[in-house]
Every structure is written in structure tokens, then in C-alpha cells.
Image 1 (cartoon, helix red, strand yellow):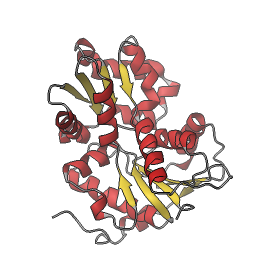
Image 2 (cartoon, helix red, strand yellow):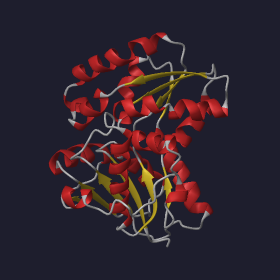
Image 3 (cartoon, helix red, strand yellow):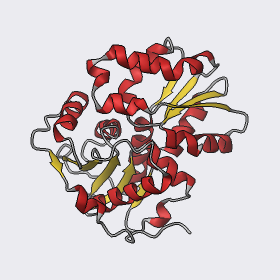
Length: 286
């Protein structure tokens, strides 16, 4: 069981921010990453579609001999949170999203009890972060903003190639939030840490940013340690990447972010096979 893989999935490249932190904290673990690049972004989709896509992604990862699956996607995590889907529905492995860990961190570090939340339309509409934060501390005020274009500029690598455009879009979405009194900002989508420095600079470095990748990696290490599942193999991470489309674009972004040569490590899977996976494989919430 210790030698089994950690499965990570996202709608595209955003989950690589989680992979990066897992590599740092768990250098001997084997990681299987799936980016659903053919259907990115998930944010504008209906809850039923997001749920269907996510279950297909999970079904694929389950075939890769895994011991834990991480939904490295704020949108999926929010929809699952809203529909009360948790480890109860996944009997053969542990499943987790990013909501709980990021919310706990924000509550722990805010000084003035004003927390900003940015995410996809689906994440913000779900109010998952707000709900969890209020359950922890009812006195905290939250300010939420949907930033749907952030995923697109990251998937298109504009945050590297056209910083001027990226900064304009940041201003478009966050100018009102900048006028608020927040001292902490949750990046409610795992894509967003790729533009974390630009966001922090926009706020004149006066706020604290919660990176969900950092928090979920800490949680994963804790969970594996407590359950005696840490891989003690002396070999460094063996990481395999799967995508449903756009192999070259994924390679370019992943290489620049992870500093890993991905020449032979990214594989394209057939989207039709993914979509035709047994839709009744996992029980649905009642």
C-alpha cells in the first residue's frame, strides 16, 4: 500500500501547483497527474456536468493503483462540498479536496477578520469557502469575487508571455476587492497561484495569500504519516502526467513551473474512453 501512487486531477494545468508542493514535502512519493485539458475550464459548467467530469477523472485515476486522490481543483472541491460528497463515497481510497484546508489556514492567519476569496464562477456561487469559514468563526467577514478569465490566461500561458494583459485582467476583477479591508486572500482555484506574485503586487504586498496547494500538500503528508502510508523508497518522485488534449501546451507550462523535463512523461488519453466510463461506478449522494 505504501508504494501505491498519489492521484491528482484538475481541469488543466492548475493542479500542477499542488504537484509542486507534494514534490517538495514528499520527495519519495509516486504521483499520477491528470489534467482534463480537453474540457477546461470547469468553472462555467453546471454542477451536474462538473460532478460527471470529476467522477470520470476519479475513475481514470483509480485505475492507476492509487492510495489517495486529491481534487486539485477549486471548482470540483466546491461542488463536492456543496453536495456533501466526501470519503464515504469512495471506499477503496481516501479522497480529499482543497476547501477545508485553505479555509482553516485563512481563519488562522487573518488579524482583522476580513477575508477575500477569489475563484471560478462555480466556486463563488457555491459559497463553499464562506460556509466553512463561518462555521469556524462567525465573526469573520468574507468578500468573494469570481475571476473566470484567470484560468484562460493561465492555460494560454499569457501570464508568462503577456504580463500587461494579465495585469489588466487582475485589475478588472480585483479593483473593488482592493478597496475593501481584507488582510487575507484565499486563491480558491489551484490555477491562481501561478499568478500569485502579480496578485500580491497588485495589493502592494499588504495582504497574506493562502495557496491551496501548500495547504493540501501539508494535509496529505500528515494523512499519509498518520496512516503509515509514507513511501520510504529511496528513489525520487516518479511522476506521470496524463492529459485529454493539448500535450505540447501542457508540457511548456509544466516545464517552466516544475523545472522538470517532460519529453516522455506526458501521455494523451482518449477523451471518448473517459466519457464512456461506467457512470454508475460510484454511488451518488442521496
